[in-house]
Amino acid sequence: MSLRYLHFDLMRALRNTRVMIFTLVTPLLLFAIFGSGQGDQTIGGISAAAYVMVSMAMFGSMSGALSSGGTIAFERGTGWNRTLRLTPLRSSTYVASKVVLSLLLAVPPLVLVFAAGVVLDDVRLSAAQWFQVAATAWLGALPFAALGIVIGYVATPDSVQPISALTTILVAAFGGLWIPVEQMPGWMHSIAELTPAYWTGLTSRSALTTTGLDTHALWVVLLWTAGLAAIGLRLFRAEAARA
Picture (cartoon, rainbow, N blue to C red):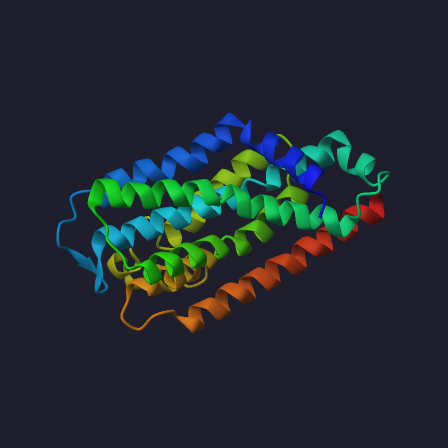
C-alpha cells in the first residue's frame, strides 16, 4: 500500500464539491425528513428512528464508496493510469488503494448520520449495538467499492458522476434504504432482494434486533462483494492489456 498515493487520491476526492455534497448532505436531509417525529413507532420490531438512521447511514456509506469510481474514470480519460504504470506503483497496490479510498469515504456520512440520530431523535443503543451497527454499515460499503471500480472502468470522465449518482439512487430506492421493505408492495420486495443494498441494510439493522447479526444476509453481502470484485478485476486486466 502506497500511503503517499492514497493521500493524494483522498485529497483529490475530498475536493470534489458535488460528490461531497451528495455523499454528506443528502443522507442527513433524508434522515431529517424520514427519521424525525417517529415517536414510539416501530418497523419490523425495531425503533423507527433507529431503523431510518441505519438505513440513511448505509445510503451515505454506499454513496461515498461508489464515488471512488470517479477517480478511476478520470485517470483513464487523462492517461494518468498509463503514467502510473511507468512508476514503481504496482497494479495490485493501485486497486487496493481504490478499495481503501472507498472505505475511507464511507466513514464521514456514517459518523454524521449516527450523530444526527442521537441529537435529533434521541436514538439510544448499547455500546455493543453501536459497534456492530457501525462495523457492519462500514464494511457493508465493500460491494459498493467493488461496484465503483466496475463503473470507473466502463464510464467516461464526463459520464461517471451521473452514472454513479443514478446507480446510488436506484439501488437505494429499490433496495429498501429510502422506503422500508416492510412497507413496500410484494413485487417490490422481490426486486429489493436482488440488490446489494437490501442485504447490507439487513445486515446493519440486524444489530438492533434481539436475534443479533443476520449471518445469512452477511454471506449474501460477501457474495455480492466477490462477484463485483471479480468483474472489476476482469475490467482492470482488460484495460491493462490494451495499454
